[in-house]
Each structure stands twice: as C-alpha cells, then as structure tokens.
Image (cartoon, rainbow, N blue to C red; front, side, top):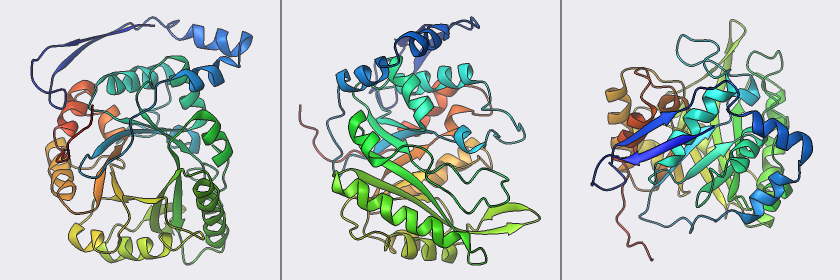
Length: 321
C-alpha cells in the first residue's frame, strides 16, 4: 500500500493543499495480516521506536483525528449505515489525514492503533487510546459502557499520551453508576502514570429503543459538572465536548483543557466549520478531536476537509525548536 503525498502550495502547512495518490489495490494491506501472523511483536517494537510528539502547550491548539467508532459497532456516517465498515478505506483516509503536518495525532481503538503503528503513521504524533467500547450501539444495556479497549497499563507501554472514555449519563438507567465508577477508576489509573484522561460526557436518554445524547446547553453543562468530579484527582483530566449553543456558558463550567468533538456531521461543512471556529476562540479550548466529519466528508475530499479544519486552529505561543 502506498500513499504519495506532495505539497502543492508554498503556504503554511496549517493551510497548505496536499495532493494524494491512493493505491486502491485490494491487497494493499495484506502485509499487515502477514506481520500479525508471523511477527505480532512488531506492534510493540513500532510503538517503542516511534518518534514522540514534543508535547502539548498552552496557546498551541491540537488537532487529533478520532477513529474509535467501529469498535462500538458505530459504522454509520450520515445516511450510510456502513460507511466505516471497510477497514482498508478507513486506513487510507486516516493516513491521508495524518500526513498533514497540522494534524497532531490520533484517537483510536487498539486494532486501528496497531495498524497505524505498523504503517509508521504515528511518528511525531499524539496518541490517545480508546478505553471503553462495551456500550455497543443499539445494545440493550448500552449504558453499561464497560472498559473493553485500552488499559492505562497498555497505553503506558505503547508510549501513548492518554486515554479517552465515553461517559454517557442516563438518570433513568441503573447501569450509569457502573460506568461512572469504572470511569473514575480509569482516570486514577491514568493519573498514576501521568497520562491524560480525555473524558467525553453526555447526559443521555433512551427513546424508541435508541440512545440519544441531550445536546441542550444546560444538559452539556450538567454532564461536565458530573464528569469533572470523577476520580480522586483531576490533575490529568481533559474534557471532550460537543459544540452546542451558548458555548461561552459551556466553557465557563470547567477549568479543564477541552477538545471539541465533531460527532456525526449535521448541516453543511461550512456551517459545521463556522461553529467550530467560534468555539475554538474561547478560553480553555485546546483544539479539535474529530473523526467522521473529516474522514468521510460529503464531497469525498478528505485532504481538503482536514486542511480546512486545520486552518481554524489558534497558535499564539512560540514553538521551541
């Protein structure tokens, strides 16, 4: 498999245009299967040998691409129920996104993370592992969102920067308390290793057999209040929050570094980007952690969507060489 990247602009890499040639040979990732079969320890070697990201800094917003949806059985994007089902296409899109130097890193489930490590796509990148994927989309006990992915110990061994946990709070479902307790323990386990706990809270309800996240401003604020109190320390905790109405009030609810999530795209790309741009200007916002909106844009131009999103980030601090 090969993805050839060329910079077609002399402008900053935050806004530069990139041309990509993706080989669509159906056997393009066959070597990953061979490595997993014959040399599974190659994943650990790739993790140890990769160049690390220089680290997060105030005034330098970060751009992280999310790719942990399939592990929860959430394959849909827009009206396509299986948009993320083809792993080869997903890896193609991820490599296109990560090839842009404005993209700081990835948030992924273990299977995707291991593929990207073997592909050498994570050099110089921030790495966040997805920890709880047990609350499968459509599962009868979806709110019992058990930790079935990365552990804090595994993330430390990988040289990762932190772990992310989805924290859906349903006041009418007793499984919520199980998830809250597990989240608190995961936060503590990450903090013991000085790793970031990226907590993604929602107040959620079940309607007609499906889980719906309440994206009203007051609901998001309440979810923050609950989530930021989890664990015995919040020293390493970040929030991962949706962009909703009255984001000024939302960001006033926390002192924790916050990254904005994209969710399943709604509205036009211009409308979505305009909402991100306004939210990125608020105090405490550390950047974007976005997946489907950029990996599966309506026009199919992954490189263009990533470059456009990168141009929204704020970089006011001096970067040391």
